[in-house]
Image (tube, rainbow, N blue to C red):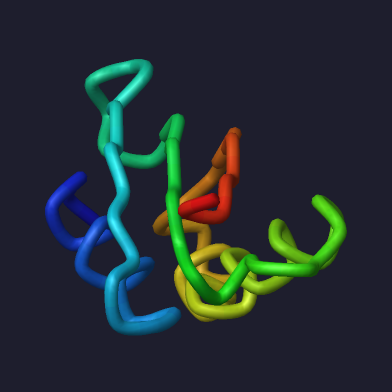
Length: 76
């Protein structure tokens, strides 16, 4: 999965979601993401991370995405 594909999938969380994706190893399966989304408004960090993991669950289960570290923020 390319960084652009990861970004596109994460952006399906909600309109106005933005993400910066970095391939940490060059193998296209270890990523770092910085995500800003209105969907995170009023949610605890663990809830925000679960939301992101949810949209990538199939790729995580298949091993296509092996590792994802993330920082999540609401626009506020």
